[in-house]
Amino acid sequence: MNGRRKLGVMGGTFDPIHHGHLVAASEVANRFDLDEVIFVPTGQPWQKGDRAVSAAEDRYLMTVIATASNPRFTVSRVDVDRGKETYTVDTLRDLAEQHPDADLYFITGADALASILTWQDWSELFELAKFVGVTRPGYELNIDHLADFLRDYPEGTVTMVEIPALAISSSECRRRAGEGRPVWYLVPDGVVQYISKRHLYVPQDSAS
Ligand code: ATP
Ligand code: MG
Image (cartoon, rainbow, N blue to C red):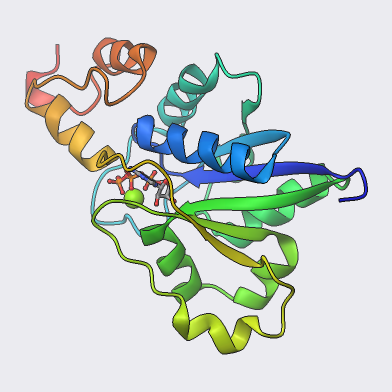
């Protein structure tokens, strides 16, 4: 619309980034004709307090490695550098300030969208970005309870998009790496190598 750039925003813990994230971003970019998708690794993570999350720098670097070959994919440090628990509203505020000439499209999987819309103030979020929820194997997204609320907003405020199903999760990648099982083809090759080089996900006493 009116020459404004269209930027996708893909937030995540990315511990590690995997092909499910990349397919989601690529699919939404194509569907919405986005100029760029910015991947935004979280700072101190949102709702993951029950487990140790890898260092933000490791997650940031894996995201850079995974997206390096795609000219339309970039990585932002806004959440990593803010250095506290990440709230989507802060991510979107910072990116909106950095890109005043752009419309933002926040891309999330069905599970994450449900939790964002449960915990955060929708009205502010919807003023900052359009939301694109992508299908994810194992999760149902029911946004019917939003229907009344969304009536006050323009069409396209929240859109659900069906994407090729990849039943990959970072949790499963961590479990596999921790057990010495392969993560090849679940994550980009460079990320496999980075995990191994940094001994990520290996129980402390067996890391050398
Ligand atoms: P974890 O298992 O640690 O929660 P994850 O695989 O869910 O990791 P996140 O970093 O939590 O990865 O997810 C970032 C975003 O990517 C979220 O919006 C999530 O819903 C979405 N996402 C993750 N995996 C997939 C997938 N396989 N298909 C579609 N969307 C996905
Ligand atoms: Mg997750």
